[in-house]
Image (tube, rainbow over all chains, first blue to last red; front, side, top):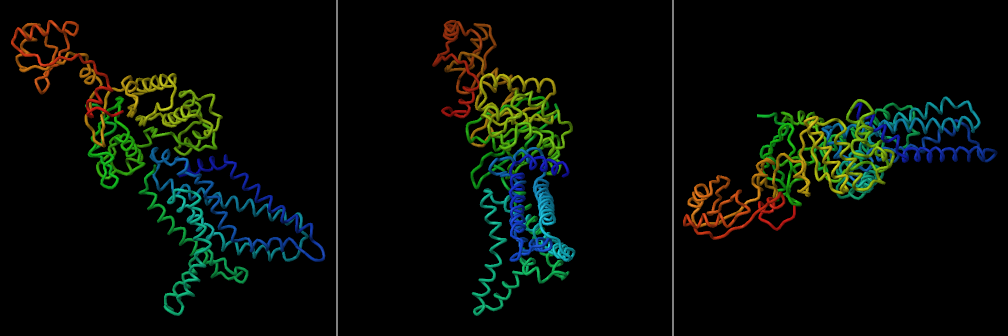
Length: 257
Length: 307
C-alpha cells in the first residue's frame, strides 16, 4: 500500500491541476485579506481574530474541495483507460480503491493545512491584532474538529461515485447532488407528507441528522459542545464506512474496459 | 513434461446468453511463443482480459505459475507483463513519468529500469515527450515498455504490432525472439497479421466465435502446410499402394473422402498420374497445394473471413 500511495503522490505532484488549483485558491485568499486590509477604517474594522472567524462561513467549501482532490487522484481513470494497467499487474482491486481513497484524503489534509496556514499568515500580516485571538483560534479549531470527519465522509462519497460511474463529470454531479441537495429533498418530502403520513415525515426529518451537512449547520451556536463533535465524527465515520464498503463491492465486480 | 506457466480449464465468458469465449483449454509451457489467431470478435481479447483480471470469467479456472486461488493469482500476475488493446497512459505525464509512476506503484526497485525499457523499445529520445503527443506506433512501444519493465516471466500481448511501421515490426519481432531466447520468457500473442505471427510463434491456437478450433505446434503446422499434390481418387488404399510400389515413396497422407496428399513428385505430376492408372485407380481430381498460415486458418474456419 505504501508503494501505491507513493506512486499516487508522484503522479499528483506532476499534475498542473494541483498547482493551478492551489495558486488560484491562495490568490483568492490574498485578494480577500487585501480587500479587508484596504477597506479597514471607520466603516469596517477587521482584526486578525475576525479574519480567522470568517473561516466558519467557509466550512461548506470543504465538501466541494474534497471533490476536487478526489478528482485529482482518480485522474479520469475510465476516460484514459488506465485502470487496466494496475489490474493486469496483479494489484488487488481493494488496494487500488483504498489507495486512491487514502491518497485523496491525504492530499485533502495537506492542501487544507497549506491553504489555512496561508490564510492565517495573511491575516496575521495584514490585519491589526486583537486580544480575542486565542478565543478565535479555539473557535476555529473546534469547528475544524467537527468539519474534518464530514469532509472525509464526502471524500469517500466522491471516491465511490468516481469508481462506480464511468464519467467524471456525472460522478461529481451525483456526489454534489447527494451532499448539497439530499437535506433539502428530505425536508421537502417531510413537509409534503406531514399531514398524510406524519410518521414517515418525522422519519424523513430525522434522517437529515445523518447527512454530511447536518453537523456543520449552525456550528457557531455549538462551539464548545462536545456532543456536536461526537455527532460529526459518527456521521463522518458512517459515510466513510458505508460508501467504502459499497464502492469496494461495486468495483470488485466491475468490468475494466 | 515441461513446466506449465499458464493453464486454463473450461474458461468461459458470456455476456448474457452470448458466449465471448467458450470452454477454452489453454496450456502454455515455459519458453513457448503461443500465437492466438482469430477474426475480430473471435474471443482473443476476451481471453487476455480474463487472464489479466480485467473481466471475471463466467466459469472455468485459470492456473498461473501454479496458482489458482484469487490471492495466489494476484501475486502470480506480478510476474506477467501485459499489453491489452491500445496502450493507455496518463496524457499529461511524459513517457518516462508514466513508467516511473507504475514502477513506484509496483514496488520495482531501481529507477534505471525506466531508462532501460525505454531504450529497449526505441523510445530513449521520446522519454520526455508527453503521452498525449505520441503517435499510435509510439503508444504501442510504450505499452510494450510497461509490459517489459519488471522482467516478466510471461508476456500477454494483444495485437501488439498494430500501428507499428515496418522497421518497428522488425525491431519488435527481434525483441520478442531475444527475450524468448535469453530469458526463456513465455509469450502469448494475438495478432491479425498472421504472416508476422508465423515468424515468431512456436505454437498456435485458432479461435472462431469464442471457440478454440485447434491448437497445434508450429512444426506440425508447417508439416500440414507443406507444398503437396492433392489427389482425389476412387480408391485411396489402392492409390497408396501405387505410390509406394510403383513410385517408391511414402511421403503422402490419406485424408477422409478418398483424398491423398503427396509431398513428393511435385514437379512430375504426369508420373504420378501414370502410376495410378497402371494400378487401375481412377483419378477424379488433382490439385497443387501450397498453404500458408492464412490459408490454413481460413480453411479451418470455413473460409471467407479475415483474420
